Image (cartoon, rainbow, N blue to C red; front, side, top):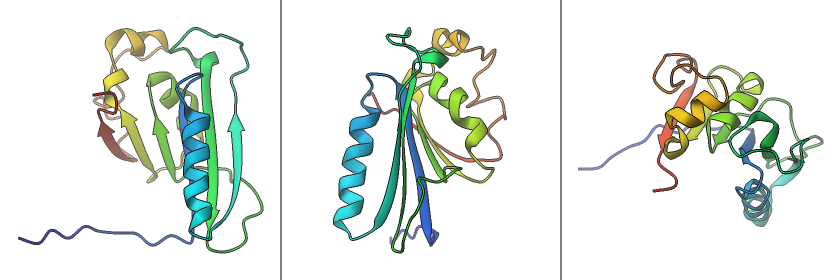
Length: 145
């Protein structure tokens, strides 16, 4: 049986990796940037470090991110609204969801969506189950396990 997958052709992509400071978002962004450049794409990046030094893990002030805008033509800015958000925990999702347009892809590390972690950032229920992400294409992935 042959499986076919739907693909979308985009003229540019803006991807944002987001998680706790120390989760490796800058490293992930750097590696993704290197691979993107090796294919001959033009790109612009925007690393974003938390405002608080040593903010408690899983809190909004401790969120770090790395944004990469790439295309096969000239890119002049790191972009405004990401087409893809990779959220490593509830804090990363909450800190970035306001920048993500409806219909965008969201890859979520489900291993970190514990009751404690969600309560820490003010989620009364899981955004993965309460319908609040229905306007997005959510890809729940247990990245830790």
